[in-house]
Image (tube, rainbow, N blue to C red; front, top):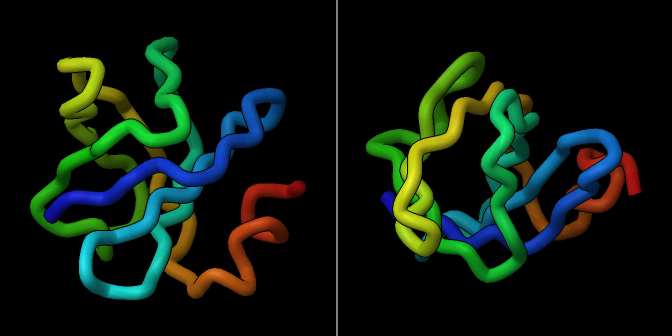
Length: 83
């Protein structure tokens, strides 16, 4: 599955990525030093798995360690990222 990073709260390390063809967002906390940027395409076989995971950032060609917090719709993205 692919997702596009749409929102990032760098000071809190929280990000939201729009899951391809689902209308949902994966909310994750970055546990790594390679920060994704808005527009980056990330890959994972199952964004619906919660907890510690490793996403592949296809745009930056690197892997990032994350903690998946939630799956939500557009209306909850800002609150989930503490914006």
